[in-house]
Each structure stands twice: as structure tokens, then as C-alpha cells.
Image (tube, rainbow, N blue to C red; front, top):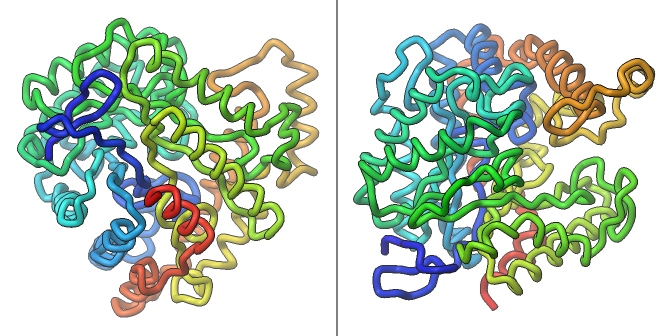
Amino acid sequence: MTLRVSGSRLVTADGTPVRLRGVGLGGWLNMENFITGYPANESAMREAVTGALGERRAELFFDRLLTSFFGPGDAALLAGMGVNCVRIPVNYRHLESDDRPMEIVQEGFRHLDRVVDLLGSHGIYSVIDLHALPGAQNQHWHSDNPTHVASFWAHRHFQDRAVHLWEAIADHYKQHPWVAGYNPVNEPGDAGGRVVGPFYDRLVKAVRAVDPSHVLFLDGNTYSTDFSIFREVYENTVFVCHDYALAGFAHGGPYPGYTRGEWVDRDQLELTFEQRTRFQRETGTPLWVGEFGPVYTGDPAVDEQRYQILADQLEIFDRYEAGWSLWTYKDIGLQGLVHADPAGPYLSRFGEFAAKKKRLGADRWGSTMEESGDVLTPLHALVETEFPLWDPYPWGARYQVDDLIRHILLAQALLPEYAALFAGLDEDALVALADSFALDGCVRRTPLIDLLTANLTR
């Protein structure tokens, strides 16, 4: 069932077209703060929790979480919906450690192999996505970045490690028929735009030398929105855009309506999609939206508008025969198709903490950009007045101040409080916390599942 690119489509060996449509498995092999409710970035969180539990019990908890987060029931649910692809984000730290660079941790493939095989048994392809690279390829938490600096692009050593890692991944999966392909760099954020193109040239050549058959899924620069960095159209390659709707963010306004001064309606969604896929359409390569999807608020009226955003985007993707991967499958209630039960062990213990984090706006994905206004509004005004020429990459001064204060400083200050909630828990309690993310302990977001199923099965 190995896929290849044929013109503007993906096809099987016998030439049958396949449009990959499904979900991203966010928060699993690359943990994210809004998905499981912790503060700051993954490696800092793991260090803090290990300090509270000790290495043995911390390893028990995290390994059990990986086992429970996605299992046979999850794969069956997705297959029943008509999903044929899951994009699997991976943190490089599962396969290589900073204190032993260039040494592949073979044990790190264990959970990834399990889920790739499980999905394949249901006829579902996997796209393996390196979501966090050594040195951090973008400026935010989801590349396990504790700062706002994407050091990957400044240090050849980090790039060497990524190439070596991808050679190992490609060698490991080169014969696997249910791996659709490799997504080597999630949302690159090369501020100067001068390194990412040559790096892709080098990476493509290295991976192709090991595995000439699997499709490459390459994100554009600036968080998969800028494709001017590509100097050639590589063979057997999909150029991946991400297409989040402005009105669908936590800070989004009404739909249709204005969000931060920009009008967003169905026509604007299509215009944005056309802009973000111009390179693919001009080069005649397949269209695949690697991430998109609104977040949900708990307000029925607002959430109905969010479902309409999603329905409109799916209709646009259908018109252009674009594949897609909705972000994300499972979390604690912001965006997932299923989410941990508020009455279950995990949210019974961490629910108040998650509410505090939300009140402070201490993770970007859940932030309305209005939290802690009494503190930050004067700071924003000061920056606008005193530094009018400052326009930092990637999103400008307003977002940069929020990143530095809310999403780094406040988030890191919350780490001891989160870790302290683990202190004193025995093994049974830790297993119960991890099992809160097993499908049987989760709540299904029925309107979202129904909307997706209707699209996938018609």
C-alpha cells in the first residue's frame, strides 16, 4: 500500500488515487501544554515532575501515559469515522539525547512502532512528523523550546543531528507499507529565511539515499505558510501548508465577523487557503493541509460558530481535492475529538491548576490575549510608544511580549506548582492519572465527530 506522488495526487502502487484525511496525534510522543494541562515546555515539565516523583515513578507515569493515550479503541474509533491518515508528532528526545548526540535510542521506537502498526491494521496511514528538533526549529513551546530563540537555524551541529536522526527513522520504516511518509520539520521558523532552503536540499538528499520510496511532506517556512524558500520541486514530495482560521483561535471574534480588525467569513477562508496553497497549485503538486482546526470555548453559541468555520474549511478543501489533518485528536477539552473526563482522576487533581493557567493565559493556544490585562496592557502600551520600530519575527511586538511574559515567564513560574501536585502519589495513583487519557475514560465531542464523519463518509 506504499504511496507515491503522481502529479497533483497521491496514488497507490496500482495508480489508485488516495486523499489523506484524518487527525494529528498531538500531545502524545510530543507533549504540549494545552493538551494535557501542564505549563511551559515538555522537557522542563518532565524535569520538574521527575524531581517530585523520582526517576522510577516518573518513568512509570510517562510510559503508562504513552500506552493509555492511544490504543486499539482509539484506532477503531478513527477507522469507524472514515479516517485514513494520522499525523504523528514526535519529539526528538525519544530517539536521541542531548548528552549523547548522534546515538540513536532504539528503544525510543517502541511506542511509535506500536501505533503505526495498530493504525495499519485498520487501513490507516501514518505520517511521521518530527515536531521538536534539536535546538528548536521554531520559537514556541511545541518544539519543546524553553526560550523564544530557534537555535536550530544558527548551529550546524543541531542540523547535523537532525539529518542523522532522519536517516535512522527512514531506515527503520523504509519497508513499512502503512507509513505514508515523513514530515521532517514541523513549522520551521527560520527568521532570516536563508538556512531552511539549503537545509531541506541536504535533508532530502540524505533521506532519499536511505529510503527512496516514501513520500516527503515538507512544511513551508514561518510555520508552514511561506514556500518561497524552496528552490526546486523535489521528486515524490508534498509541500505542506497549515491553515488555521483567525476567527477559530482562542482570541477569535464572531464568525462571520472581525477578529483583531480583520474580517473573517467563508470567502476570506477560501482566499487565505488559495494564498497558502499557491505554490502547490502552481507547481502541480498535491494539496495537503497538515494542521488546521478551531478551538472550542464551552459557550454553545460560540462553539456553533467554530463548527461552522470547520464545516466551511472542509467544504473548501473538498472543492480543491486537498487532503487534511485536523489538529488535534485528544486533549483535556480545548480542541480534541475526545477529551479527558472532568470527573476523572487527572482533571479531578489538576483541574484547578488548569483553570489557574487559563486565567493567567499561560499557554498560547488557550490564551485570549486579554488575561492579566492589568499587568500587560500598560506594558503593551509602553512597547508601542517607546519602540515603534520593533517588529520581531514571526508575529510582531504584541505577540512577542505575550510570548516572553505569559507563555515563558509565567508558564515557567507555574512549573513547581504543577509538579507539587504529583508529590506523594503511589504507583496505583499514577497509573490512574495516566489512564484518565485512555479512551474509556474520555468524553467524546459528539458534534465534532459527527461533522467529520459526515464529511469523510459521504
